[in-house]
Length: 252
Image (cartoon, rainbow, N blue to C red; front, top):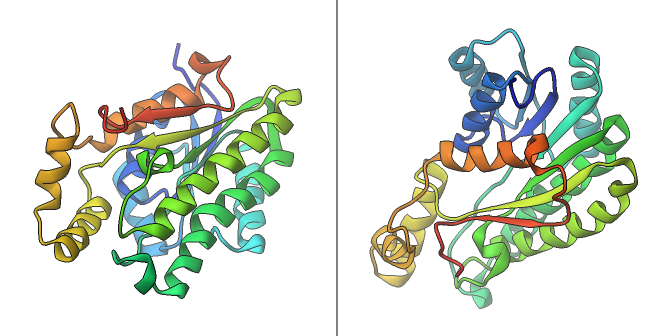
């Protein structure tokens, strides 16, 4: 039996590599999926690529409360109450020491990663079925530090605190809440980060990371999507308040 048969799933950051890979896998496992992303054009491309009748999409700024309520309500109107809420939207900024880090970039990270996940929980939980699952995409740096990316690291740590608090509140309804912590992924988002790190430090950041990761490579988006599927499905029925590391051993 498909792992997500008839489950209603929302994926923010849905047009990015991890969001798209997760949507493809969730659909294959029988889900009904609402993709949410800031870019309507990117969403349209994702819908064309996936070409599935159990898929819908809506553009939204996840840091905006009204837009969050709107994508939640659109999902419920289209498919019914939500079973899986995958808060996956993210952004990136400059790589620079904290003493030079732009304050507006710091605020933008807090808005998308932290406020976006908070709003997803605030407005998504009342529209979820009991026994559902909330997944928040953090990062390996949500469990460690890294130079030059103070806003990103801070936001990813903050998501863990949000998850732990919401997990305690949602448990009474059997709703599980966990964070997913990917290591470096082979995608455009990560490539830009590594390019900026390389410029700041004068190194080949991709090579440096591959040498630091015990599995000696970046993850493919599909590999991280399988971790999201685990948290979304009943395979993780007794897992809540947890940090799932999918980092190739980098943190260890």
